[in-house]
Image (tube, rainbow, N blue to C red; front, side, top):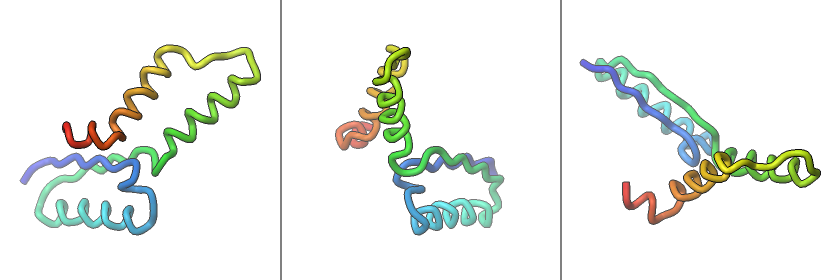
Length: 88
């Protein structure tokens, strides 16, 4: 058939049950005769936790969260908002 790329991240890989569900979707696509590529990104709130940790580290001085990181954080928050999800 075709080549299918499936990306899972955030809440879709936040716990064992959700990871299993994502895996079943990939297996089903493969069983239907497709070539399947699975991309897995950060689990749950990992991105938020890393940004918070970076802020804590920078609070000691000597670094700052640059404007690029701030824009990235803002985009990440917008993607997670219910309004942004409905707009997709």
